[in-house]
Length: 542
Image 1 (cartoon, rainbow, N blue to C red):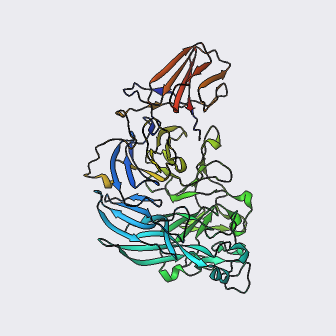
Image 2: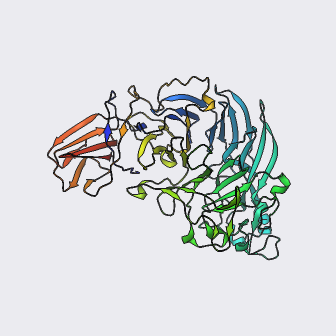
Image 3: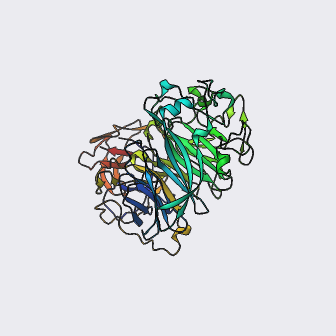
């Protein structure tokens, strides 16, 4: 079980007495008041909820999502769908794209799936109505060897090569016009076989991908696992993310399809080579394993123009090899807007993120091995999706958690309030302002919550005041199966236990020990009184 620990002080009067174990866990005055969109990977449903966890809109599909969903400004929902493909099997394989209107009418669908290719993970809606699609194609073993792959690094009979396809949907049909493509196979370099055209010195060509660099992988077909595709309209550039190489790449989208296959020769012209890369200098001969700044990351994207830190890149770094996650924000080094600089000694800058978030108490307490996202919000807060736990939390400028939600819609169905969520994976969670164009003229009256048996779930707001973390007061064991002890040199006048909705569950005088043995599993707060000092901490009952 993951542990999320931080110190809170709660000022509130409550109506609801039920304890929340799923849905909204914490809703403070400092949370951004918007609507959050998410599509559980084990469900056919896509939800739009308010901060109380109440559904304000919902879409249903015949398909579970392969990963991403997007709410467009006109109120339509663009969604990926997972269909069976026995030839290409890895997490995030989809093959289906759907477009629904606000009323859940299917406007368009498109299948891109065969034994030779498939859509995977992500799509992106362009301003002109076209759709960028992330896909992989199958390169047979003999072709991979002809392209310079070391045969000893091919464990399967093929290699998956990523590409990006731009689609022009033909609404009302299951068809689309393919109007642009970019393929990774056109931008490979290798130093294994000098008889091949792409033989070269890897370090001299950071704009190309080393076909024989596999990081910690052993040569499986899925050697890159590109898991994200995002777009910057101002720059007309794309950014993609390789989870297995722990690296991100920026690519020009202003090229023609023919130009997208060309090499820039190391200096930017019209070509499809990388304009920028970051996260793992070892991949192109500019460092070693200790130089790595990203770890199995997801959702690199440009922060929007009207937000704090506009134009910077925000990345969820999962941290598999180090066993804790972080949010990284960087400003790529440029000579002018959209033109990235490369230092022959240092590589692409910066050498480190300018801002990083990890769990402030213990980094290992925040860890999502797969999926996940981070989003800058209009009030400066950050919404974080811990995808492998279906756990969304929002932090303010002081890194204090001001809103929490746990997805109740799991691979095994929707659970009841009071239950414990598992297998409740979510690829991303995105929060929208209430004045987002999609909501104009729409009925957003809250209905029920996603979880079952909500006991009314009135929308109460918890006021949160952060405390400095102090070694003078320690709670153990935490998580606990029943008993809590307080280790402190302070004299204790009183201990109170509250549930997450602020109901006082127990009060104990002049004692450093308290039992919650008969309580449901979930999150509680322990408030410790010592003279004029009051300390409140979060505890977990398992």
